[in-house]
Image (tube, rainbow, N blue to C red; front, top):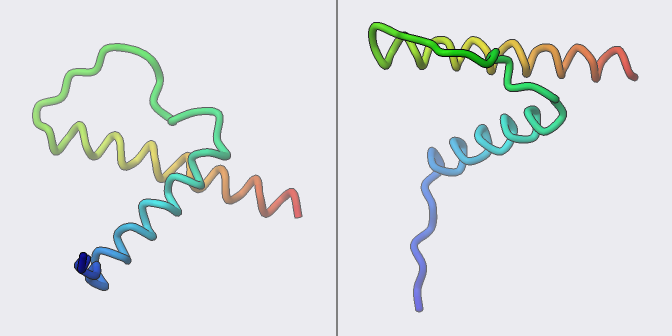
Length: 68
C-alpha cells in the first residue's frame, strides 16, 4: 500500500502544533480564567484564546530561561 507523503507546509504546521503542545505541557494553566465569556464574534473569541496562549508560552519560556 502506497501512502501519500505530507507536504512541507503540513509538516511545518504539525511542528508548530507540537511545539505549542509541548510548551503548554510545562504550564499549570491555559491562561484563561474560569467564567462565562460573551463575544460579539468568533474572531473576538479566538483573539482571546490566542492572546492567552501567547502569554502562557511566554511565561513558560521566561521560567525556563531563569531556571538555567
